[in-house]
Structures are given as C-alpha cells and as structure tokens.
Length: 232
Image 1 (cartoon, rainbow, N blue to C red):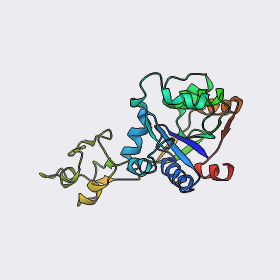
Image 2 (cartoon, helix red, strand yellow):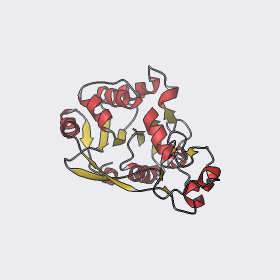
Image 3 (cartoon, one colour):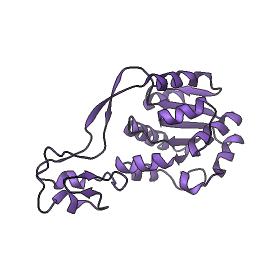
C-alpha cells in the first residue's frame, strides 16, 4: 500500500502514533510518505521522536515532506487529488487541525492533504486528541523543575545540552530542545523532568468540532493510533 502519515503539533498520543507508524512501515509491501506540519516537526523534535520518524523515509513515495519545503501551493498534495495514495493517516490531530477540516479550511500542508484526499477519494483516518469531554492526562516534554533547581554556579544540565536549549534556573527553550534527555541525566538534583503527566480539560468547542468529522466524506475517526492497524 501507498500510505501517507501526517503529524500535527500535538504531544498527546504522539509516541503511540510513532510506534504505530513503525509497525506499518515494517511491512515490506507498504510505502510510507511522512508529512510534517511546521508544528508537527517542532513537537517531534522536542519529544525526541524526530529521528525515529525520519529513519522510516527515503525514496520515491517514501519521502519526508516538511511543510516549510512545500511553500504555499503544497505541490505534493496533487498526489491525493489524483488518488495516488491508498490511505492518508493524520495522527495525532490537533484541535486546530480538526477545526479547520470541519470548516473546509485547507491552508497548511496537512489540511490541504486531507482536502485533496477527499477530492481524490483517498481513504482518510484521523486520530483527534480532543475526542471526549472531561479531563485528559497527557505527557509533557522536558521541563525545568524550578522548585528542585539549586541554581548551581555551573549548570551541569545546560553544559550537557547539545543544542544549548537551557537557560539555567529559568527555562528550557523547547524550540531548540531535541528531546535527547542528556540534561536529565546530567542534573544531580533531578531538576529536569521528562515525560511528566499533566491533566488538561477538553474544551466544549473542540469536542463539538471533532463530532462534526463524521460528516466528512471518506473520513474515519479513531480513538487511538493502535486502532488503525486493524482497519488497514
């Protein structure tokens, strides 16, 4: 199968999405193109998953497609309107992405791909992060825990950070962070955390938009990336 997998800027279910992508890519008959929105690229890097995703690409119909390289016309989306792919998967899909899709807006790489997939009758699977009302536990990227920070004269975490993303005793610049966890290992006081769980509340408008996805022709919605495997 020719499959396109698109990442948006969500951290929730990101690791699970990468793991599912790896399983699909392990099937020899599958060709996988990976599409990254600008936010998707940033988030994969800060969670330390970018290299795992890019290692699955290479070759015709197995490209790594970055939004910043597609400019404003998104020429790769023409493959979808021509029906060249068997399946488009967007996982995880942010509330922003979902809101645009249900209102017919196609102004970035991922939303344009979904719109063109509809025109080319390419099956589309979506895994929204805002699916049900209530509270949701999600995983954070690296974080500086100020209550544990000792404000050392020489910050070992900052010294160990390859992209120089840490301002000692202040914060971690997540746009520079590569998710390598070197800072976590280096800090003797455990002041850098990774994988911490935070509880967030789902907004009513986001849940309502997700419900409207059912009205989009050719779109199937899944609660978790693992559910995709049984439906390919």
